[in-house]
Length: 375
View 1 (tube, helix red, strand yellow):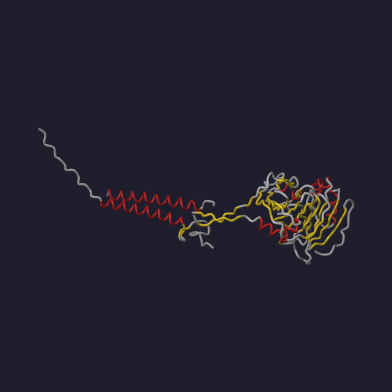
View 2 (view 1 turned 45 degrees about the vertical axis):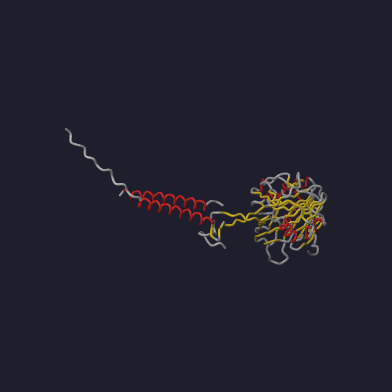
């Protein structure tokens, strides 16, 4: 009986250790391993449009600024308008889509492998690892000067000058577009400073087509002695905003403030060769590329435009992306070898202890001595 109790005690301890090992193992298994951002996108009445991601390239040589913008849109709007303030008289033309591809490749993160020990989802036992001619001028309105209008691909572009935000709002409204409430007031800081405007009608040339997918880039050029990226009008957006900005300048650049969004993140900084579309944009001059990414969870908090200044140093930076790989030996997951080996070791030790206890000789009891009778 006593031997059986001891055997059960040893087995119980082994079982406890095994359960603790499995609990540790599987506990580790479950451990955690838009609208327009630069201006105001105004769709037709009773239509909807969304800009999932705005990506822009800004090139600045200290005197002239160029903004190349590309939108990826969705929705059911056959037409929509977009307005962007600029500090001076602007020229507008179609940009090169190849520009974005070149800059994305230049700023691509470095990839490194990083092994991990415990399996994750997809690993066993959870699953198998597997430009056109000019359009007719739009009619002007009192207080608004239509200084130019061009048809560029699917864009109908009007360049406007106005010192009266109310007149500018009326002009947009009279040309068939509803305005977000409060936009007139948001235009006032620009009219007070004498800025002009680029108003774009996104109108597909094919009858009945809707705005969807990646649109042709637009390139806007204007004189500016400071690097600025207009953002104030985005405060009327109803959904969170996301902005990706490629800045080409003589030096590394940084935003003066977050203007009501999350802190801008630098995802790349370094010099780029003036070749291809990049070279055509910079006039063959080498430029320092700074790539910024920023989100605006509450667009209503946007309180100004992005002003960018030279950083203290032209420090290069490239993100590192780790590609996780399950650690294996000879094709067998390391966790299985170690946990299985540990369990086998515990089982072997337990069996050895039982055998040793069973084969150990039992000493005979001491002889009983009968005391002599008293008296």
